[in-house]
Image 1 (cartoon, rainbow, N blue to C red):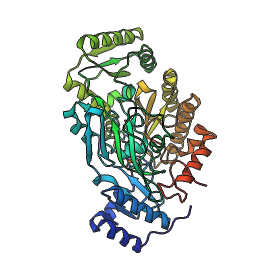
Image 2 (spheres, protein in one colour):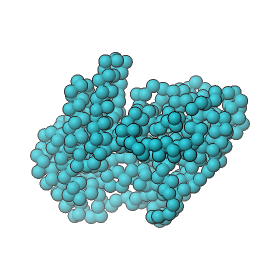
Image 3 (cartoon, helix red, strand yellow):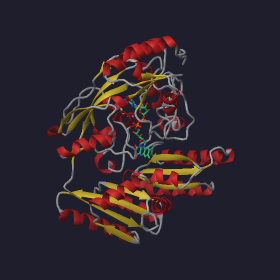
Image 4 (cartoon, rainbow, N blue to C red):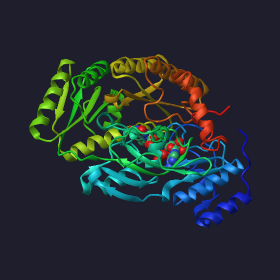
Length: 463
Ligand SMILES: Cc1cc2nc3c(=O)[nH]c(=O)nc-3n(C[C@H](O)[C@H](O)[C@H](O)COP(=O)(O)OP(=O)(O)OC[C@H]3O[C@@H](n4cnc5c(N)ncnc54)[C@H](O)[C@@H]3O)c2cc1C
């Protein structure tokens, strides 16, 4: 696509529209919005704008569309695949200041928010109402960014990902038109599902300004458990057995031995250094919970479990999940001077043991340093590859391993990305994963964004 160069006249238009303080071409602002948390090379926008309301977004996008200026929405830039990088320059719309919780309707298990609200802040505000928004990616992401990437987290195994927890959206289309797909009902059979088309589209089909989210009740009772195993195979087989037994854990996470070692080192932990499962069960009574945990323990024992600690209190349980959430950060901290690529694939649950085994053996075969962990209960595997990315020989091995592992996940009936999105890094796998459906996706993109101004260079090319 041809884009027009951003001019001083465009800058003047934006400054007149939103005020001088909310449109910046300052070097540090451009720099902050040129990279996310991935290893992908940076791209600088021409201008950063901080909108306050839907109508402002609409006017900016309509202006950009008429003049063929790229527009890329930005949450807090914690993506891991280059998703919010402005590959063709233009306008970055930063949602930081659209951070209002508009209405809490706990009686309907719903909340209306602006796109820039961060999910951890939201849950702090919601807890007095006895409800919470369940999807919980490791980083304190915005709701807009979570919707963009269809993010999920440790509790997805019980509550689903972002896509399962959004009822209604306010979306600005590429021509500036505002639509409000969805409704407040618990279910609906009405019309094409535009809400779920937008979710996971990474800002390439429309820009979300507001959302109605579905909430869950905060459980009365919970119990966390940590189980260790003689091998990764035994741990992953246990994951399958726990899910197959219908135990319904609230979280079920795998950590390989290297990840456990890093957690112990960086968080002064005393976890047994072995392939490990972190689990959480929730319920309405102590008795029912105790039975679930006992059942889980017996499944672990059947798979040769070497240690099982359960019934930890609220503080220890929070620390446990904090450690899991921080795993990627701890890996980075314990490898100063190295660069990192984080692979994210998901496969059908029955294939999870095979997938983890394949991934671990692949990095061993290539002689690269890696750490495996992930949301095992939903078949989601992360593999962090650490190395010197200025070394061409290393990058060749890294890319070959990445290609083999992601292709293998797809061949098992899985996906190139369980939750981090396509961004820049996974675009090359789209034909392999989607086959003929990719052409329909391209047609949808052409209809919704004929000038290709929305987050260009991601997901799908118009040509
Ligand atoms: C330490 C760490 C741990 C992580 N753990 C997880 C995890 O467990 N699970 C998980 O899913 N992810 C995880 N992530 C990745 C990341 O946090 C999520 O993908 C998150 O949803 C990104 O949100 P963000 O606000 O940073 O959005 P950004 O990175 O700014 O943007 C994400 C995408 O959404 C688009 N977008 C942003 N705002 C809007 C909007 N208003 N309308 C339309 N599109 C928009 C952007 O253009 C981009 O394509 C982790 C990242 C880090 C650094």
